[in-house]
Image (cartoon, rainbow, N blue to C red; front, side, top):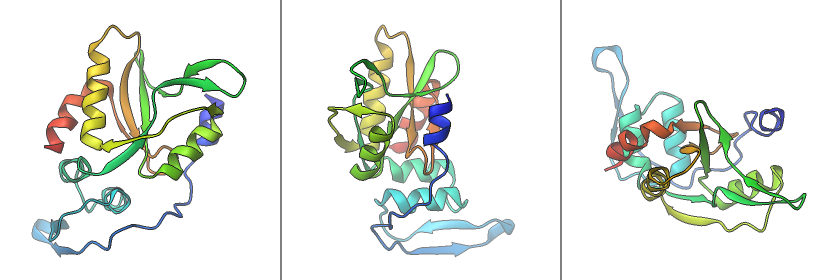
Length: 170
């Protein structure tokens, strides 16, 4: 666990938002509500708005489900010559599969944890979650959830909540 704490301390986010999204803010009942005026597909800006409270979970996942994310298989080779799971531990025989908003973040993560010879795949976040749910339906000793941009935002989805979040993305 010490290795993960060292790797996943909050990092300064030097990746710029790829899209300049416009928002209209209103203040009914003393809460800030964000109305989307254009289609949002930039993961970084969505994560920033969710983190700052401008997007609730439902709005965030509804939009983030369309974002293309980057990930690899959970099992792979380590630089020490062995093979292992490259996931983040969670409670009750579950773990988080890491998923990233850029190829660079995926490479950085796998380099820091010593993974070698990996393939980075790209798909929508919703497709990633649906695939993860299918993996969990098999006879696996560990059930997987997801973590978005570990070390940067670390939004987590527990294995037993995948179906709820998938419903939010459609």
